[in-house]
Image 1 (cartoon, rainbow, N blue to C red):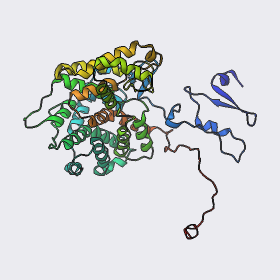
Image 2: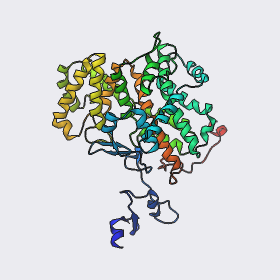
Image 3: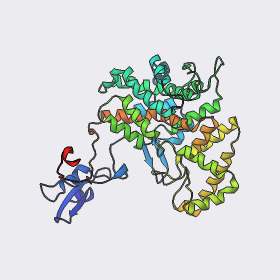
Image 4: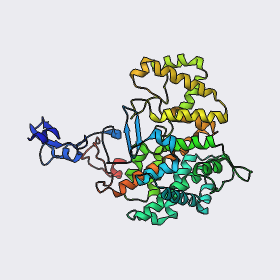
Length: 434
């Protein structure tokens, strides 16, 4: 073996056969197919990996989002999330995610115009949404209506055409707030509000949510900014559950509406999009700052769960949590203080100083404060994941677009380890039941 091979490969000895194999290391990974050469004999299948939940398996190469969980770093296309949240806006970040670079003034103006122009949906979509029960969950309505868009734009199936892909991306980013707001209004029994294209993206969304009899809805700019920042923070997060769902379904070369509806479905689950609601329930159960020490003891004893702390990726302070904490303060300047915020601040202070939590690297994550902000906006908990989905849409679409153009990608088809019976003899029902 050469020195180069020694540095850039993994030498594996199969103790069953004594055979040694050199497996190339690229980008700190080995190709799973290379393990297939390791086998007992030609009649046996090659070696495979068993990795439920993709804990240590890379499914793609991507240039969209970079995360260093140990250092608490999150970057979109190389730009730190802190800078984007402070200096950019959601539509500019969406452009960055989709196109891979920041827009010129002309590109940005054209992008905003396109998205603003496409905020309306076909009237049949409105009829479709009105057909749901009065108590339908907004997330279920969003998932169904996003999938239904594929029937309104059958040309979306032509995913190999770049101009066509761009058109579908614009449509989906533009229409998600409309669908989300109408899901909210439906649950409240209120008439649907059409988009107001004189307003910006986030202000228009707030108008469709809360406008009643006034001729023009004007939201406080601090609230608009706070929600815009939340959208930015949720815009992408590498290969999470919902993004993996979009990529997996998209690998069949289906239209992007169907792929994104799969992402919405994944986000619907409580282990993915429902964490901020769990934080609110926890804070309400604690009840007051005086009860925090007893709650902390309960966590250490295994009788309570500390929600909103810790993250599968971040082993440091979630960079989004620091930004969202400031947004929470801005929102409460407008809406008034929330006693739950006082509990949250005190709980965070104690947890960050307690050796039990520090040792386990349990730092606040993005969900710790986002639920408080959403509640201050007077959103019911079932709307939290809808807001998450609107923010995440550009990321899903950027990942989908990258997948479509990646020549290495194949239709998702993981292996399994079969654990059932083999070679049983079938007995006809007439004999089994006699």
